[in-house]
Amino acid sequence: MAIRIAAVVLVGLAALAFFALDGEDGAPAAPTPRAVVAEAAGQTLAAGPMRVDAIVRAPRVRYRVAGRLDPAGGYRLCGPITRAPDRSWLGVRLWLEGRRGAYDTLTAHDGRCAAAAGWFDDHPPTLPFSRRDLFRPPGAEDYLHAALVALGGLDGPALSTAARRECGRARCFALQVDFGRLDREPPSRDEDGWTLRPLLRGLGLHPVAVRVNGDGFLDRLTLAARPRLRGAPRPVRVELRLSRFGAEPGVPRVVATSIE
Image (tube, rainbow, N blue to C red; front, side):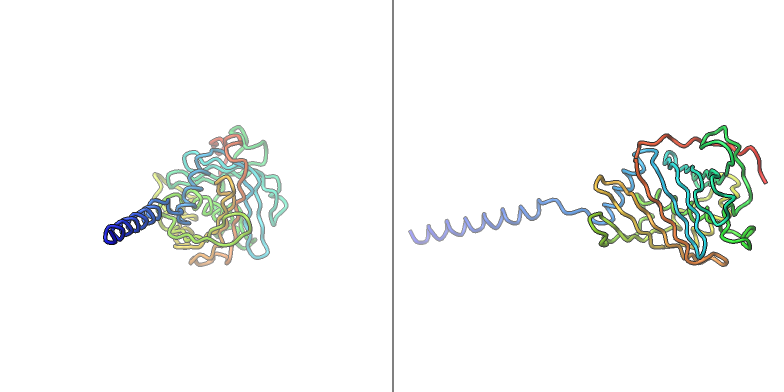
């Protein structure tokens, strides 16, 4: 009788151990920081046109563009310049596009972000950091392009590592982004790429900070750029503030009506 009771006890203990192990193994594992960022980036890009407040800062220089970002087929950003070191830039519309490794930067002094505006294409840099940089790239628009390129690559292999960092109630992450992976050969001649592509290669594996809001959208991206590139100002800080995901009108494709 004692042997039978002992056997029953041993069977019961074995069953408890099995169920305990099964519960541990069957519980869903918490997603890694890299997976969280990749999912948030994918959701953000899939949502459609959104509001963007883009800021580029360098020593004693600040540009700001408030407008719309359309991630369809790459990205298109358009909006008025609301802050610049030269007041003649205030109110000028800036239009950026990145598509299949080719890039465009156009400006318009009339109209809104519409195809019918008088779009102008000049030799880069379009937004210089100082008067001595009028003919020396990169310009502030190159760094803004670089941040947009990074945003478009966070749901793929260019996202090298991610780690959670404290920032109050939101979920914030410190990333390492491989900008070299995001440098692509354009399908045809691309003057804007002549200044942007060396910047992407000069950034290499570079830190980027992002924030994911409660709805799972990536609503902040910050790039503190210190590229290995001769003549480039250091540091240059780019911040993208995103909102109204999928609730903004699309940004049209436009064509330059004049060129320098």
